[in-house]
Length: 105
Image 1 (tube, rainbow, N blue to C red):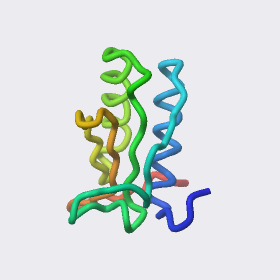
Image 2 (cartoon, rainbow, N blue to C red):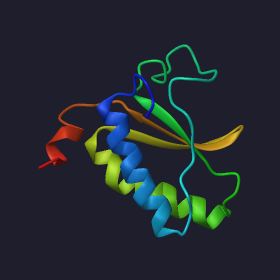
Image 3 (cartoon, rainbow, N blue to C red):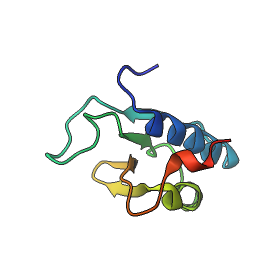
Image 4 (cartoon, helix red, strand yellow):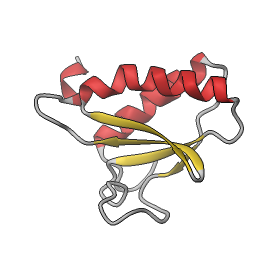
């Protein structure tokens, strides 16, 4: 368990785990509240995390990103494939009526 992780990020990590599993890959979360991030980063608040991609083929990474976007974007998340260094960045950044909690029974 990561200290200080927001429930929104924990939920998205579960979705990421399922998406990685669909492609036969293992999710490795490389950063939540730690590491160096930009001034406006949501990492310090526990609302963002990064996923390892360096051990995956470009085709696999593309599929995982598409699946994660399909499941998370409508709920207020941003899923971004970063290139330097390569990783998937996920953050909860609600816009308008989007709300991750509406999906939980």
